[in-house]
Image (cartoon, rainbow, N blue to C red; front, side):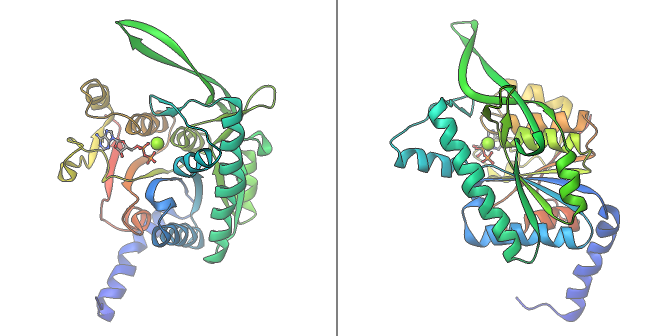
Amino acid sequence: MTLSPLEKTGILIEALPYIRQFYGKTVVIKYGGHAMVNCELKKAVMQDAVLMHLVGMRPVIVHGGGPEITSMLGRLGKQSQFIQGQRVTDAETMEIVEMVLVGKINKEIVANIHRYGGKAIGLCGKDGHLIEARKQVAHIQKDGEEMDLDLGYVGQVERVNPGIIETVIAEGYIPVVAPIGVGPEGESYNINADLVAGELAVALQADKLVLLTDVEGILADRNDPASLISSLEVGRVPELIQQGVIAGGMIPKVNCCIRALDGGVKKTHIIDGRIPHSILLEVFTDTGVGTMVVPG
Ligand code: ADP
Ligand code: MG
């Protein structure tokens, strides 16, 4: 498809009010799913972050890494059990999770941002004591009774100390955060990256939280991509979870949007990371590319 000069300038001009609106503003991006695996999508996400940064926004990336962790555990002959979408993490698994997330994936993202013309610094929750964590216990219903389940080193965010992020941004770098928290004894915790992104967005008082995923957004019928809910009011969420419409990995996503809105983040979006440059579309154009979770 070739665009006429008028169409090209039209697109740039459409971005102008958004660039002005978001100049100097913080946007936290949860990077995960397909967009972390597919080469074309990887490049597009890096370019989006670099572009946002160069026009004066403050993008902060929080990444996941589930599939790579699973593949490394497999190579080492370990299998994981999942409870409520969380990986049960024993001490040995935690070691591998940390090595893959912090040692491999985080540094790859940093290297790619540099490759596409930006500057980035990789951090995990231990750096500057960024993410203080405590053990998370899962509550499940069994035979009509509430039970606690031990998930090992699965953590929840206790406190965020965003100082190191501010420093890194002030020095002109894009912060890239691996979702590992640090416990009271210096131990590591494996935390869902959506939750980290939400808490970080609150601590930074971000203007926008964008969660990339491998579906169109929140669907009214999971088997029908055309059933996208483009705007979802917080008040409707408990009912949708109760009915099983929102389930699995979508639950932490929507909950973290709610938490972020409660904590003062202005806008929250769950968008389709399979569309190249979906972040750019969301931030710089009138095109909606997923579900916006809104107060109400
Ligand atoms: P990510 O890697 O992006 O965190 P997850 O697998 O954790 O992905 O969460 C997204 C998944 O949630 C979807 O792939 C889908 O299977 C599931 N899901 C559950 N309920 C819904 C819903 N109502 N709409 C869309 N996806 C849903
Ligand atoms: Mg998930």
